Structures are given as C-alpha cells and as structure tokens.
Image (cartoon, rainbow, N blue to C red):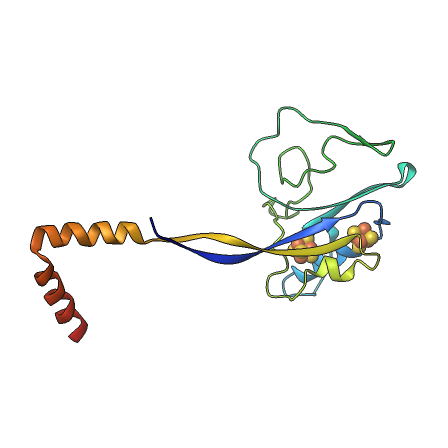
Length: 177
Ligand code: SF4
Ligand code: SF4
C-alpha cells in the first residue's frame, strides 16, 4: 500500500519543578491572554496552567491543562521524589469533577492548553524568567494519510465494470466542462 505521510510539529512544554519558585507569572499571562477581549483582565482561576504550591514543603509544580475527563479516576498515586511527597493529583493534567482546576469559573466549562495559538512561543514559557518551563518542538509523521490504494481499488473496479476506455472518455469529458 502506498501511504503519503505529512510531517507535523509536536510542541511540548518541559517542566522543571526544581527551578519553579511559585511566582505564578505563568498563570497571570495565560489568563490575560485568554481573556475577552485579550489582556483585558487576569484571573489565575481562568488560567490553563496552574501551579500547585506548598511553600512549607518547598513544593511548586506547574501543570498545564490537558484533556477533560467526565469521571474521577478510581485509583490515585502519591509520589515521593527527592524526599518530597507530592499529593495525589499533583501531576494530573485533566479537568475532572474532583477539583476546580482547569474549569472556567463562571460556566464550569473545561479549559485546555492551546499552546497560545497564534503566538510564536507559548506565553507561559516566555514569562517564566527562571526557565522552569521550556518549549520542545519535534517533527513527527502526521496522521493524515492519503490511502492511494483505496483510490486504485476503486478505479480498478470501475474499469472492470465499464472498461478503461469508457472511464478515460468520461474523465476527459469532465475535465472539459
Ligand atoms: S512563571 Fe515559572 S517560576 Fe513562576 S510559577 Fe510559573 S513555572 Fe514557576
Ligand atoms: S502554552 Fe499558553 S495556553 Fe498553554 S498553559 Fe501556557 S500560556 Fe496557557
């Protein structure tokens, strides 16, 4: 089968929790960029990136919003990394019924990071002055695939039914219209 694959750019935000100081500049710029009209207000509750903060335990985890989940997950995990214990939902990106993060405060509609569509660089990355957030871009083969084989099979069966000459005549007629 002949398959043409298109390249697409995958953007990922790498998060270094050791560098995050909890300043929340990322939340401010994200909510301001997505306000209507743009930059008319800022409200971290509307941000698509939230910083889980626990200064007493020196815990700062920036998490940006992923997919919406209708149901809470059944089992949750606690993580201990470098002697720090992270709460169950700390690293989760879902907008789900168990917490208020990643929900538009007025409507309750789920929020999802759109990588600041239209901007050259995600704004939270740009505004994070300590480089706790960095952008990674990689090229991947896309899902858009032209399945030429299907077209060939279709043409072959038409040619079997009506004869190749008739098909070519028809195409010629159509192209002259
Ligand atoms: S802007 Fe950077 S340092 Fe500040 S809270 Fe966000 S990720 Fe952490
Ligand atoms: S990339 Fe843009 S939309 Fe996504 S969390 Fe950062 S500022 Fe918000």
